Image (cartoon, rainbow, N blue to C red; front, side, top):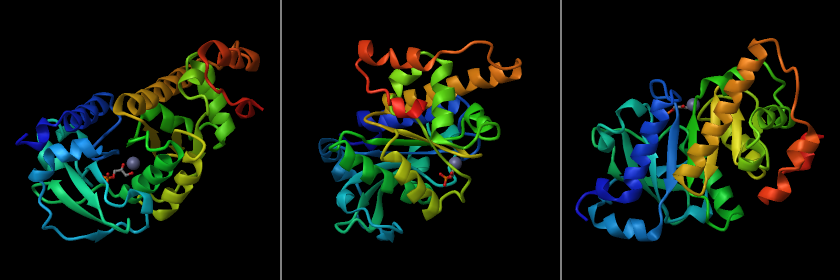
Length: 273
Ligand code: 13P
Ligand code: ZN
């Protein structure tokens, strides 16, 4: 292979950014995405990397990510432009042997640094890598409008958001049986939002950042994107229902839990208390 952009997973990364843009979730530079690369993927393009760049501090320590490579969007870069100029809007970084520093080895050819949320992505990759025995590889953050709107309307509690969003589409409890976490408003890119999200991500695959957006993860791009898409569509239905005078009938607690057995999913009954 003589071009990083020919690697299938890099193409998928670029395509997922573009799909997210088409959904309207990424105004301006809103949102960011990262992918923890597989060894066999890195092996195919490693000879194209430039290792002469400087190590820069991550700002926190992620020991179990030492030596790993990530594909990640650039800070301040527009999702709108990723498909047209991927090499200027995304990059590949290596994490050092202590899990404390990173180095850009490819991309951001016109300059730049990884997303300002990179410490949050890495901390949450670290937690999910451990919890899923390495299965989870993708983290996406974006600004879908209906989900954000709900954070001005509903109490900012995990159980309230889970119940309301589960109820809007029958398949929601099947798609995210653990539910959804919610964190209060926090400064974006801060270590506070990294650690608060990290606490929630131990239990959930999706965390809503109040008055800001969603943070989702999964084993691959389809799963993480599908999760965000499902939550946002459900939030859209809820906004429509609220705008039309509110619910006149409901899916009951028992009906939601009845989905667990036929679909073999561990729907958390505790989220419905
Ligand atoms: P970046 O451009 O640094 O990725 O920031 C966008 C964003 O959505 C911050 O939460
Ligand atoms: Zn954001």
